[in-house]
Structures are given as structure tokens and as C-alpha cells.
Image 1: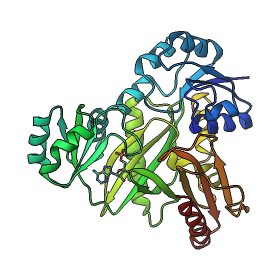
Image 2: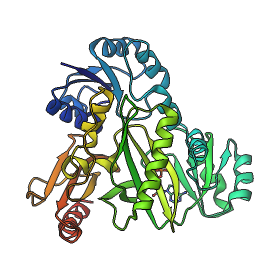
Image 3: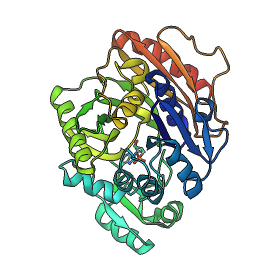
Length: 366
Ligand code: AMP
């Protein structure tokens, strides 16, 4: 049996391990916590992400190693890659960990981005504000996720506070983009270089955290889908990426701006478990194990609602054939993703009716 090592035992690792079971693939995860979500479904090596003994143990136990979050130290990924095939390649991590490299890469392959200025000091922020103006967003170059490491700047007077709030670390300043909507393109690329794409997903964020994804996104012209696919393919080819890959996009009129990329399975792809012919988790495993990539077509109309900060008491959702609850078994904490609900329907109207019920229940939870 093929054994896949997963660095990280969060919910993404858990859902990868669940998908692996159906493919007859075994998984083992590495996580500092003994009670991580993935530990419920796969054996865990308990250790830090920079613990060479733990990494060596993972490499020795695995035929191929992958990761479920992008802040895995690149040195650890390289350490693993000297011992066992690692997919996606460590280079994908390197680009995804630094907003400056990421944006430069997007521009290089022809995906437009919002204007940005690199900021490395308080004085540098003043200069950047002269160029970019307000309202703008100051984002740390590294270790930002779910709205963390970013702060809005409404006026030049707020610069001091913003610089402190971002942690006085190397950052980027960019304008607050008046987007019409947020989209994401989910792609998967195999070891043989063949790629496939899921339909564009529309995403609604709250406080910088993904709240609802709708798939396929409504009103997407084939040309828009093709454009997003072209950009994703170009980035993946440039990185030699293998596995699932996501780019978060702002749509402004007919223009697409690249915001962020994730070299891994992505929250806006959770709907694929019930809503696509092959889930992103299965396809990630297929890609990294050198198996044929499964169909990415959307079979139904789906929407996914994240449960953030609290989970419903048992029985809150009407769990019918069109409502699917996934709980990650994590402790409650404000702003933490604790689970998600996927709603499917034969058409957008039916799906939206059920989605309305589900979001109301989720909202009442806080
Ligand atoms: P990020 O960490 O860059 O993915 O940002 C999280 C969310 O914050 C995005 O999905 C947007 O909803 C919002 N956001 C980030 N950057 C901008 C921006 N420049 N303009 C408007 N909204 C933004």
C-alpha cells in the first residue's frame, strides 16, 4: 500500500486522510499536537515542523510526502526532499510564503495584481502611502492567513498604529480594491504535467476569513474561466507544481487581479467532496502519487459555509441528503475554523433556499 506522509494534521490533513482511505492509500501525519484533527483518522508523529528526528521518521515511513499548510519551513521541506519525493515541490512553498514573491510571480505570468509597495520601516510606510494612497491595506509579507497580519489604513494618521499592528515586519501596502466579487480558481497538476481545473468558485469573506463559497460561481463566461485557468496553469508550470493549487482572485469589472495563492488543498474547494466528480482531496492524492487525475466537473450546484468560532449543538442543521456537516474536532476559539457545511442542489435556486437556512443557523451560533 502506498503511504503518504502529510506535514500538518489540521482539517485539511484530516480530509486528505479520509479521501486516502477510499483510494486504498495510507496516510501518516506530522503535527506538534497529539490530538490534531487528522489524528482521528490517521497515525500521527508528534513533533515540531523543524524537528529533524520527527521529519526523518516521517520520511522513512512514507513513499511520498505532502503538506497541508503553506507555512511549513522551507528548510524542513528540503530536508524531507533529500530523503523522499516531496510534492508539491519546496519551491511552491517558498513563493507562497512571501507575498512579494507571489505578486511578482503573478505579474511575470501575466496575471495582473493591485498596485503594491514593499514596506520595511515606519518611514517606508509613509513613502508607500504617498504612492498608494488611502484607503489601503498593509499586509505582512510572511505568515499571514485568515486576515491575520493585515490591517486597513483609512487615513495617513493611522500609519503609526498600522505599522505596530502589522508587527513592524517587512510588509506590502496595497490599495483597498473595490472588487465586484472574489473568486478562486482551483487547479490540480499531475507528476506528468497534465492539469485539470475546477469551475471558478465565488467567495464571501467576513473579517478576512472565508465565510461562504458558491460553486460553480454564478455568471461566469467561458472566457473568464479560460483566463483564470490559463493563469493558474502558467503559475503551476513556472513552479513545477504537483498537486492541488488555488489562486484567490478579485474580479473588478471584467478584470481579474491575483490576490493570493495556496500550493495545497484549499478551503474554497471543500464543496468538491459532495459537489464534484472527484474531490480536491482525492485529486491531490492522485496527483502526488502519480495516478490519473479524476474528473473535476461539478455535478450539482454547491455552497459551503464555514463554521467559525463555534459549532452547532447536535441537531441544529436539518441534515438531509442535500446538507452535509463536517466537524474537525478542534477546540473552540474565536475566529477558528471548526467545521463546514456543504449544501448541494440540482439548480441554484434550490441550493440557495437551503443555503439561506444553513447560514441563518450558522449565524445564530455567533
Ligand atoms: P488575504 O489574506 O490577502 O487573502 O486577504 C483576506 C481577505 O481580505 C481577502 O479575501 C479580501 O476579502 C480582503 N482583502 C485583502 N486584501 C484586500 C484588498 N487589497 N482590497 C480589498 N480587500 C482585501
